[in-house]
Length: 125
Image 1 (cartoon, helix red, strand yellow):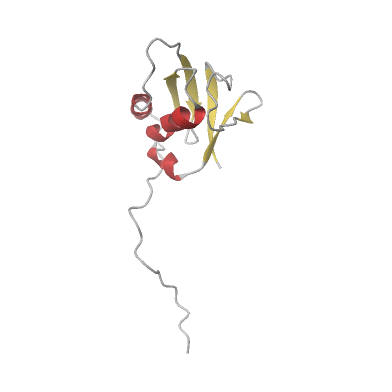
Image 2 (image 1 turned 135 degrees about the vertical axis):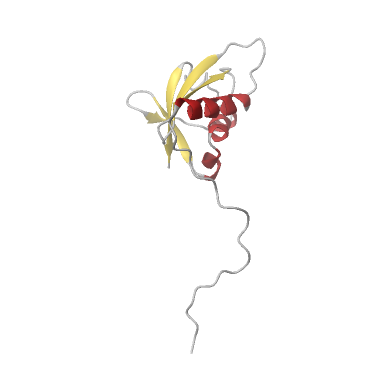
């Protein structure tokens, strides 16, 4: 007689990924924004721009960036630092009207993508 039970082979590695922050109160949003901004060191002497992010759980946070910063390295770091659950989930950026996906190819800058002073929607995929 064969055993048809399910077995786990090997130990499960590490703790479960964190849940998304769902609190949209001002104090929580402020903490998320502060944590995210601290992860992006601005370059002295370069111009700055603001990007407002609308997160999937309803929060809205604003980041200050240099236009020479990249989408892959800086905008993604900003979002993951705001809510660590993004590190364990695929997400994309949308901007414009109607919203369209932002190409986040390696090396594309915020200025090159024409995202200066814009609203960016963060969408889980």
